[in-house]
Image 1 (tube, rainbow over the protein chains, first blue to last red):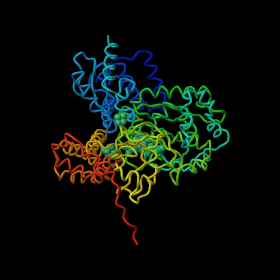
Image 2: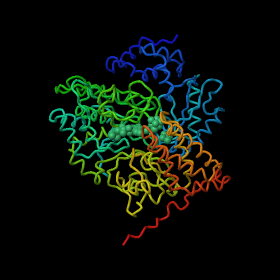
Image 3: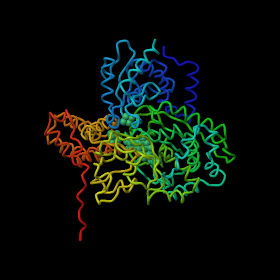
Image 4: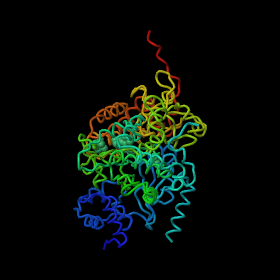
Length: 163
Length: 453
Ligand SMILES: Cc1cc2nc3c(=O)[nH]c(=O)nc-3n(C[C@H](O)[C@H](O)[C@H](O)COP(=O)(O)O)c2cc1C
Ligand code: SF4
Ligand code: FES
């Protein structure tokens, strides 16, 4: 069953209170972020229906929004999601080589997850870190100035955390 | 050292926190406004400053504020645009991470001027750690009586909320941003009505960029007239430039708008020159949407004058030989970079980010991507170059929002200035997948037209 904890439900109330009476739909994107964090890093139909019920809107209103925004995952992803920027400015600083390196190191292609369910590789468009390229998002934070050595260290760090 | 108005205190340790910010002159502008100015006087001061929107379009902020409709009994909203997703742009992030109180103070003053009691900061979702920084600053400001009810005994109430987006460049466009803030897909609205009349929840709304709103603080502190003395002509004040690509010192710089592009690119105070001892090939001076310029047109205008870091000078020559200030994302390409490849990367970006509402944009961006992909991979035909030209022309001006133009311009400018590089790809299909065209003649001095007698 998909169900927020008491603490998270209070957070939901606090978010809804940011908007005028009757405009609770504005809380949709913040709630989808919260739900994705809580329920396994992706938005299952069940999760989306739950969010719809919290906001008293129809499920389709949730689906159409969830599918529009690239940060919402519509299928399960690995425990560690490597989102590597591939846009122009990062490309000028070798992002293609970093993506290739990660692929060979993890033995997966873009959009794939390692068989142990630990890593997913995704390419994304400019994350606003162009001066610190090449870079990727890992969870809440950015990893910048990537080199093969740094990638190795990040993979090792994730493996250590997972154990 | 150039004069600074925004980042002058960025180096102070703990300036992120209220007590340090306050001890270094923070909230003095807010105090001045709340104690001695009317909302109209604040708008007047901003008008006098000549401040232009720092989000990309460069529209005069004071004028925009004076358009805000003020019907009785209807709330008005200020929304801060922190979506920052234009490739090459990472300046607002810097302001929010290092000087959150400068933004909060700017929001307080601007909300007072516009009569907004609920102000929202819409920040791109990927900047996931920054809302914590902003929310802490908001909490500190509230504890110290700068937010909440009856601020400093003036009767003015204000709450500021931070709202995260979720990965969509288009949500930086102001009406898409409003839709997103209402919990919908980021589909831009057809204008009119403009947000100043019907914006957030159908109420009058002003959307301004982070840097624009932060700049209101020094404007109040030193006065609009004094602010207008910074810079040249209609490019008043200072501008944050985020510099990236193949340079020695990528990063965020505050410049007074009176320096030359050459100084910005080569002096050690700013970019420090091209990395690894290479030569400059090309530059996109204002974020991915503005036209790319070859080296010889970047440093000098077609008239042979030194090009300056101002709205007017960057635009000198129009589409034929100029570019734009845009969002201040300064992207530098060295002699080893391939313009076709870079343009393909941008075309892929715009295709990915098109909201899909208008066919010229939805289909055209996809076409451009595919044609560029073929040329880049040695599978292009000469006629593809004309096809690309044709597609971009059919997008430009035929869409609901400016993303269509933003997708068309980089392709148009790349073909205009680097056509021979495209042709070289077509004529050398095997070689072009192995090596780049190089610097070619792009840095050669321009033949100057002799003055007409
Ligand atoms: C596709 C597109 C993306 C945009 N992205 C941003 C952005 O990320 N940040 C921003 O401040 N303005 C962005 N803008 C410009 C906004 O629509 C709007 O003009 C700006 O926020 C107004 O603020 P200003 O006058 O202070 O610049 C974008 C415009 C378009 C068409
Ligand atoms: S121009 Fe593109 S992004 Fe803008 S409304 Fe049309 S389809 Fe959407
Ligand atoms: S291009 Fe990669 S962060 Fe901007």
